[in-house]
Image 1 (spheres, rainbow, N blue to C red):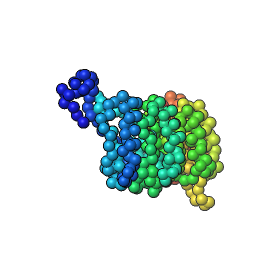
Image 2: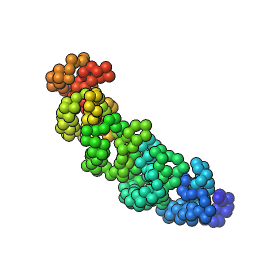
Image 3: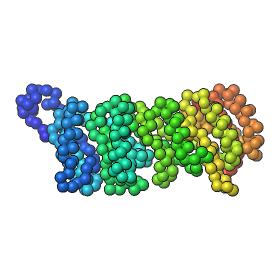
Image 4: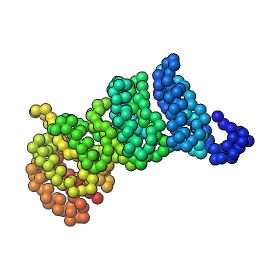
Length: 335
């Protein structure tokens, strides 16, 4: 609804609303498209909350057939404001690959979790949500057909994100053990986790929903060692070496392999900085190849000292196999 300037002056006394624009706020796939749908009354209530919390003038509310699925209805709140409202959302649309954590297999499980997640969302963002619902979907990943949606007007002090990393091979401690370890480490850092799970799509991913001021990227760097005892010793060594740095890995672990098979790898899972990324723990391969891991290990102290004399802050060094199964030394350097 748009008012002519003269009508606006009469109605609003030349208030700022006369120069405001008209905007549509859409609540996608909000309700089933059926006779006597509760959508209309529910969207009216959302409009009232939005007007009260955001201080906008709500012009109208409506429901219409969803642009994505004609079996569902989209809610529409039309409001007047100087600019479109900024929204803070539980769903992380910029990272669809891991956003699968907001999906549920049925309405009951989604509804059961909705209250607690809404309370956590409001506590961490500092905003009052004006809508929280379980969104029915006709099709989605993993045959899960209900998505949790929570939104609030304004910019929250934190945002909700989904991130994760691929897990290649079962960890020695088991998948659940790795999941618990990563979650506990994030909790130790003061990062509030909303949900965590191992999600299988094209790859198995350890995926975490969390609140933070910015998205944190996860990395999982691997070093092929092909020896369980060597890998286990590297885990202990890495945990000691990384303990004193500012951003230690969230997990260091070895993967299992079936008896008689090769492929044991040391995994270093990091949040925010990877060992192969600039400003992270740089993976500097020492020059030359070694005849064995034992020979490489014997040269490790000399290579670390040489790098330190060159001004590098060497955190640790590991001996591993390259793609051609040649033994190389990896110097992990923080710069």
